[in-house]
Amino acid sequence: PKRFMDFVVVPDRAVLTRRPGTMLRALLHGRKDVEEHFAAEFRPVLSCFTTGRAAEPLPFLFTQRDLDHLATAGRRLIEICAAQPDFRMINAFPFAPHLAFWLAHYAATAAGVFQVSTGGGKTVGTEGNLRLLRKLNPDVLMGVPTFIYHLLHTAAETGVHCENLKRIVLGGEKVSDGLRRKLRDLAHELGSPRVDVLATYGFTEAKLAWAECPFPNDQPSAGFHVYPDLGIIEVIDPHTGEVVPPGQPGEIVFTPLDARGTVVLRYRTGDFIDGGLTYEPCPHCGRTLPRLVGNISRSSEIKELNLDKLKGTLVDFNDLEHVLDDDPHVGAWQLELRKAHDDPHELDELILHVHRINGTDESQVSRELKERFANHTEVHPNRIVFHDAEEMRRLQGVGTLLKEQKLVDHRPAANGLAGTAKTTDDSPGREIQSKV
Ligand SMILES: [Zn+2]
Image (cartoon, rainbow, N blue to C red; front, side):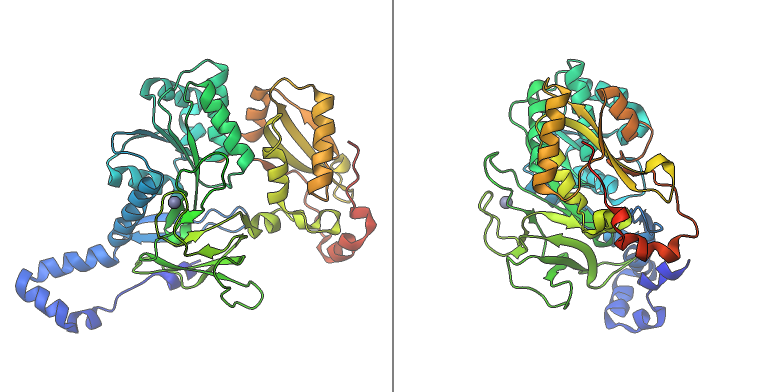
C-alpha cells in the first residue's frame, strides 16, 4: 500500500547541503530562507487521486512547485481556449480530489477569470447549477460532458436565458462531434448563438491538461496544444515501444519536466491517438506548439468492462459512443450490460436506454439506431428502452453520483467460473443476439 511512495521525489539533505548554490543562498539570505525554499520545492501540499474505474485510486502528491506549474498550465489552457480576463466562469467539475476540479480552479485563478465552483450535480443538484446559470450568466462553463449536457438540456426545458455563454470547456470524457453539435444547439436555445465547445485532454499522472483552440464548426479541431517546457510527449508503437514519426497514430507516453512530489517517467497512458503528434503551426490560431491531433480512444475503457469479450470480437466503447452521440434524435443515453434473467451462466445482454429529442417517434429512432449500429459496430443492443429526461437523469445518477454513468455493468459476478472463462468466451453461446 505504500508503494506509491516509490514514485515520490524525496531529497537527500546531505546532498542538498553540500551544493554550492545552497551554501551561497544560506550566506546571502540565511538558513531559514534555504529551508523555506526547499520546503516549497519538495514538501507535498496537495494530493489528487487517479480515477480509473477498475484500479484502486492512487495518490499523486503535488508540492508548491507542482502547484505553480499547474497554475501555469491552467493559465495557458485559458489562453488557448481564448477566454478573456473579464469572462465569468462556472467550474462544474465534481468536488473531488481529482485533477479536473483543481486544474479548472487554478486555471481561472492564474488567468484572473472570475469563477464560481458548483461541484457538479452532486453538491448543489441540477437546480443549484441552474440558479447559478441564471444569476451569474457565465461566459465560460467547464465540466464533465454528460453533466453539462444535462444541465443545458434542463436549462432549455425550463426556459433559462444564458445569453453570455461563449465557451463550453469539457474534461474527463471524450467529446464527439455529435455532442459538440448538440451542446451548441442547446446553447443557442438559451440565447447564446456563438459558443465554442472545446475539449481538454489530461490525466492525473501528467498533473496538467491540454486544450483545443476555438475552430469553425465546419472544420475539424486542430487538436490539443501541448507545452514542451513542462513535459515530453511521445507517440509510440504500443507493440515495439518505438517512437513513431510525426503525424502517425500510436499510444501517448508522457514524461514531466521539472515535476516534484509524485513523478512518473515515460508513463504509458494506454490512450491511442489516431492523428499522432504534429509540429506544424496550428491552422486555426497559428501557435507553433506541438499538437496531439485526432481522436483519442482509451484502451482502459474497453478493458475495464470486459466489453471486448462481447460477441468474441473487439468491441470499442469509443465506437458505440460515437454512434449514439452523432445521432441527432438521441439525447442522453446509457448502455447497460446484463445477463439474461440475471443468471450468471446466461448470455450477455446489451440494453440501450435513450432519451429521444427533436420529436421523432420511437419506432423511427429504433430503426435508425439499428442501422447505425449495423453500419458502424459489430454489436446490436438486445433492447432499446425509451425514457423521459427525468428518468434518464435518474439512470445516469445526475445529482446522486460524483460522475454520471453512460455505461453500467449489471452482470452478476460469476463466482467460481473464472477457470472456465476462456472456453466460455470462445463458445458461440457468448454471441449477443439482436432482437431489435
Ligand atoms: Zn490552435
